[in-house]
Image (cartoon, rainbow, N blue to C red; front, side, top):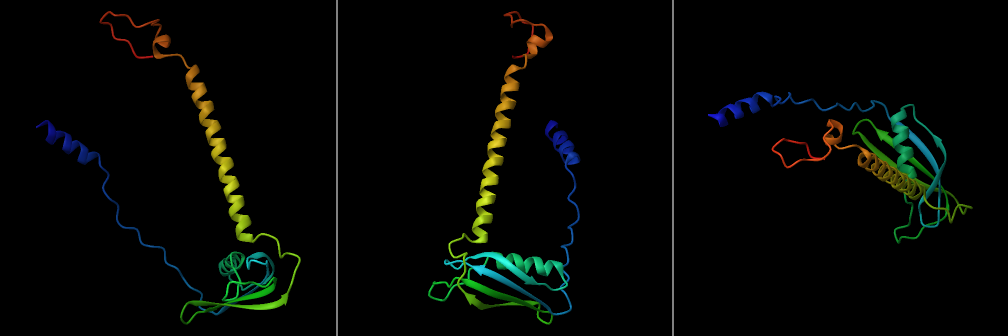
Length: 173
């Protein structure tokens, strides 16, 4: 009897599942898009930085293609790379919804041959920020524990100086 009552109360307290939410619809552009990104590539084939861009009139496409270009590696099939300036073009075809990417060497050489790639710099920065946040969180936890250690016990707040062996109930410290 008690079990049935508890189960009924639990069922009443459980929220009913909501109706499934529709997935957001993605509306692809109806017109062809084209962007060009000129990048500097180091001796490992990593893109060091974006030097210039020719953008389309769709901001999200521009952001995606520039972000993609910053994370690229441009290498030969054998794994070697040429330091230089490269043009990366992105073309969106509205008929089939695909984006094609083409890479062309503009000029060889550059003073950025030994610089780290842009993606490496971003990853290192994110790692450093995460470590700093973790350190701050640990310091906050330590301060909170120190503050909690200084709090009086409930017995002290209530005026009870120490638990007595009598049957009178006291709260633990």
